[in-house]
Amino acid sequence: MKTFINLIIACFFSTIALAQEKPVKIVFDVTSDNTKVHQSAMRHVKMMAEAYPDSNFEVVMYSGAYEMVIKDKSVVSEEMEALAKVDNVDFVVCQASLNRHKIEPSQLITGVRTVPDGILEIIQKQELGWGYIKEGQ
Image (cartoon, rainbow, N blue to C red; front, side, top):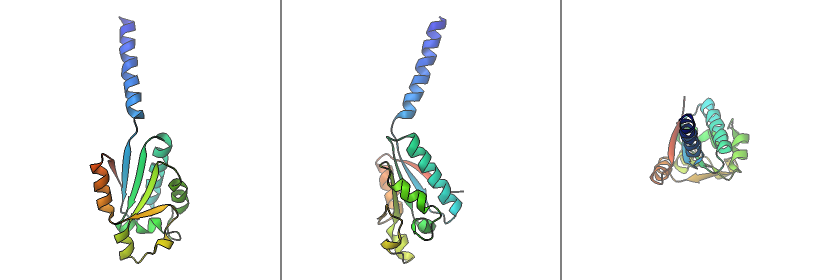
């Protein structure tokens, strides 16, 4: 009986471990102009990308977060540029937000791409089954 219970417990924990190893797709929503939020988002994406290399992560920045992607204004430019080179991480910024603030493509951190609308990008990812994380404080 004790062996049977140990077998059930082992199967239970094996199932949990396998469930956590299943690849996921997560979109991170960043709208804040708060640099602590920018740093936190980068930390989260880096940890997740390292822990789950078979999963996909996209950071969508719009509204007040536009400075997060500007080379000479971002407090996370080095981290973002390095992470943008990782196969399972993608950084996108809303073109409408850039237009509103008169930001040129040449001002963006290398590896950041634009999408027409940040909110629409998130909705489209969710329709494809991506999980959603709102970064903020």
